[in-house]
Figure 1 (cartoon, helix red, strand yellow):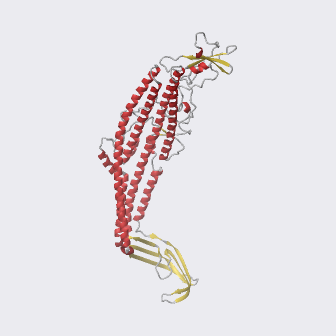
Figure 2 (tube, one colour):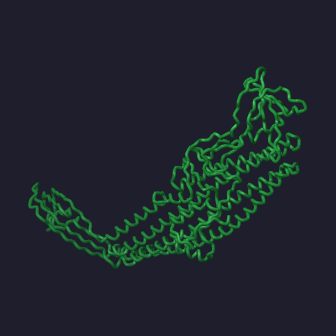
Figure 3 (spheres, one colour):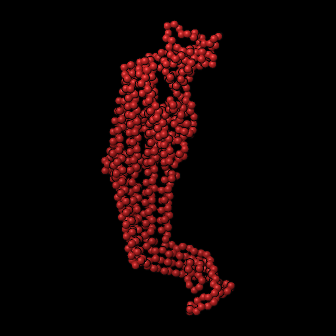
Length: 599
């Protein structure tokens, strides 16, 4: 076992796509391509000026562009050669002879064109540089993913629709989940709110300060203390700590006043302290949940890119098969129906590639939302390929893992704190009728007044008030109802804790089983890829030798694509189950170092 803290665990997650990689494509290339150059460029359809015989015998796509040599030759082909293997082409007043060149042994049957120029007049020697590989038109700022440069109808179209992208690997994505993230930031500020409520509860017994001045004037009838009614005009004025005094009574608004129920002063700090603990664990749970969501969203993005890479490889195989089949059909050695069938499958692969590009865009948008990034900018995963990772050792039995989760899971700790807070609230209601409410007031300042408009005899004044009252609400029925309400909340919190315990146990058990069975799926689908590749290679050799049927190779291509996509999905599901189990355990401090499974 290797002891790690959370940041160390995040750093070790960077092994995804590093050591022990097994590429999912036959010809792996770097993840980021600053320049995309096609080594075999499509050739434009043959002009209508080419002889019909040549148009039928030359395929529409060539795998290689050969240099063009200009020589003066006769229009007619030399004697003894098949006229159907020659043709003429007129470009800017010049005529070119097109000659079909035989393919070399052990090469795929292709048609290479060598052109010889002539015109009605003196020979014009035009030096021509050897044809360089044709480059796809790309944007320098667009980052392409391995194997994801589309061919055919998709040539030159980037996998993203904007000229900029965000490059991320898994550790970088997880490191972005912090206090600035909306979900995590909201939970952390709820903790600060709980701390403020605790601080307020702890000073509930301290007095408040009320300072100011007040003026009162009365004109007209007034009842004296002996009951007589008198017509009097008077005024009074007070300033300092406390205001509102108008006569012999105490200052109605004391300068220093403490008014509280003693039960609140005793129990509210305890309730607030338990609430702070619950909010702390809730914030930790929000962080863990966001880490899991980020990891899952990132693996989905890698899955989308790798799936597009697999489909591109499958399209290349299908296009190669179509070319061979189409050549055979034109040469009369095969059926045009077979070529049409494979052409249909080629269109269906193109359709799946469109869906793959949609998955990439959707996965990028969802990861951007998880990381609170600009959704208009696509995200580019830096992991070359998806490989199985190990975050949690399965050497421990399921019961031990469940015990670890019950001790470490912040959601369960939050539930326990909420139960404790509900218990303290019940105790407050239980003892409330037996402890008093307290009022302490002290006022000092200047006070004066007089008759009519006279304001004189202003001098110092002091008032001290101390009041304690006991209250039994609603003849005791209100107290009983309050205790029943608090008791019901305690029971709700306890059952909620039991529900969370059951949920934690289920999530750990579920993720544990998923990892076990998905590991088996990885092994099975890996064997399926080997069998499918062998089948494809053997069937391809047979059809080249004129022994097999094109549909047999097509079935092998389809089987290989299915096996590779199943293998990719098994790896993604396994890695997501690993993150699910790590989350279900509460992201424990002690965990084995993540390693790639024997690849």
